[in-house]
Length: 397
Ligand code: LMR
Image (cartoon, rainbow, N blue to C red; front, top):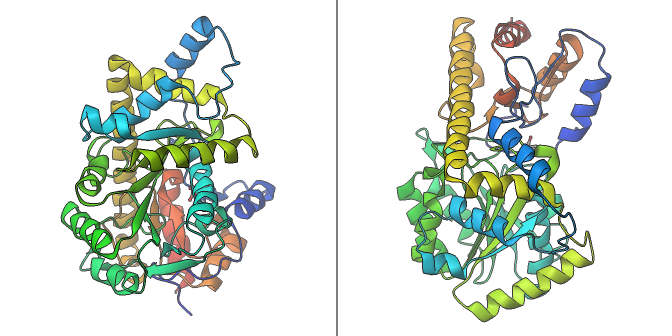
């Protein structure tokens, strides 16, 4: 059976298992296209210049590492409001509650526990396909996970297909959206479509949750947040889980945030207190270093500007790689065969290959991709593109 970028089959290998298998593979010309980690042409995940500046600043100026704050530092909260909610007024920003978390994954995991506590009978709707770790992270919620179809039609996200499934939701259900660079498809709704979805959520009384792991990789840091301005105008409550793993290259520092955008401040406070209890009973306090790096960069105007340029550099590089890869596929006559959609945002491209073909690429050529056919072009440098295209071609001759 052919896999496609539409339906996510049960994965035989997780991303982590594939990374481990890749490490153990002794071949010199092996290629790992599994994880969404930005690698430069040398195959390294670079440390951004702004991060180095911030880290040097911290070495020289940080006076204490015992703030002992379960929700992170106020400077970090200020930074998140500045970068994730630039379209909010100062008054609206004040009403947002930001909590530092262990990446966006940590925020999503807390959401599973919070929804289970506050709305045990509500379902959480996730896209099909979605990131393989969404459902495990939400696993604390016992009210059930449902799926809505996520596909492209006419080279755009199909909002009608999303709504077709969400019409079976009940008021008070939660729906997880990817704010930009949908993982794995790379298909994003445009602003008109986000407005349609926001109005739909309002009418159906659904509470949107946004996973925002790829800020800056679709258009730019600011434009990628426009969706939140739209939802602010349309719904009473929504939640954002954002990450600085990709856009600051702070993967291993685990730095992200959970933001509650609720109109009722009593509700905000109640969710905050519960979140603090959940944090205290699991990891107690978040690691402060990554948060301090992120806030130093964002709260300093010069560094903020420089960081924006660094993110643009990575985004443009991904665009170039994607376009080089598609041209190379075209040259070997395979583009039409293995691609349904070619307007992806972000790090991923889904290839229409069978599981058997994906297994052959792994065993015979040392080319590692997810069983669903998702590849990360963030690890696909110029030298590897011809090798990959030739190997794909050989599968079908
Ligand atoms: C991915 O989808 O590859 C990334 O989000 C990395 C991860 O943690 O899975």
